[in-house]
Image 1: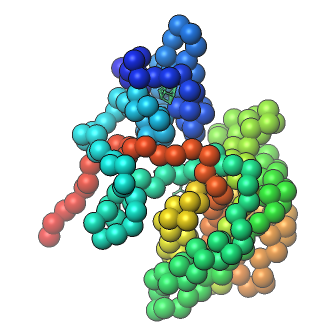
Image 2: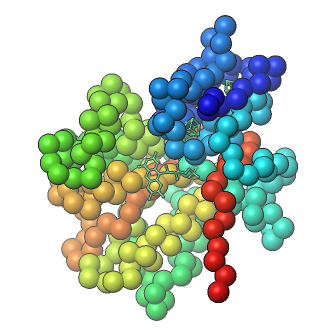
Length: 272
Ligand SMILES: Cc1cc2nc3c(=O)[nH]c(=O)nc-3n(C[C@H](O)[C@H](O)[C@H](O)COP(=O)(O)O)c2cc1C
Ligand code: SF4
Ligand code: SF4
């Protein structure tokens, strides 16, 4: 089955669908061909839909839709009670950022919204570290790769994945922090049984609020895993005594826009 369908009359061969694919499996067009996902790579597709929704010409259709294509009117995304669904459905992980940094005042405005997130017993246990200096973000990515190297011959769920990630890093591709200018860490008290959930809720507030400020985010799973167990990274972050990193998120100014809404699994609900 062809994974992506590209309309040859609409495709301008801009290359964006290849650049945004997080799995790097969309081969760019040349004079004779359209963008394509080769059969050998199709199994790596995570069905995120970024190739489809990032196409400025609406030329590409991901051929795995389980639902009809949801039209995204030009005005969608302005938050009001009417188009909240559009606002949330058009949120995407951003993995391509401009070089500009985000002013601290803007970051504080978004974090201030996250202050109102739900927390168990209204305990509000979440505190933040913002890594604002892009050079420090790079250092954290380096330490995450160092952590990955310790897993290479170990019995760890990540051991099978790390050679590919380390290889990409060594070829100059930042697959850890995606060249994001900033990182956000939520940290919580050790030994608080609900705080890890509180942290994810607060980070989700940041994730959801950020696009209203023209800021793009992406959950930084590799960094978060390293921060949970790799002492050199914990030292670098300087998390206060008695507290631990709950999770991490990269953010910055997005390089690309989103023009549509990708397919997702059908809603699964049991009524009782
Ligand atoms: C807990 C968690 C960890 C993630 N870690 C990473 C990561 O380390 N790198 C990355 O590029 N994307 C990461 N993602 C983004 C997912 O790949 C993304 O959410 C998914 O493909 C769906 O795409 P969407 O967010 O645009 O809907 C993470 C997402 C979550 C929720
Ligand atoms: S993003 Fe759209 S227009 Fe650009 S190369 Fe891909 S399919 Fe063609
Ligand atoms: S759906 Fe996502 S992983 Fe699959 S080809 Fe498109 S961009 Fe790449």
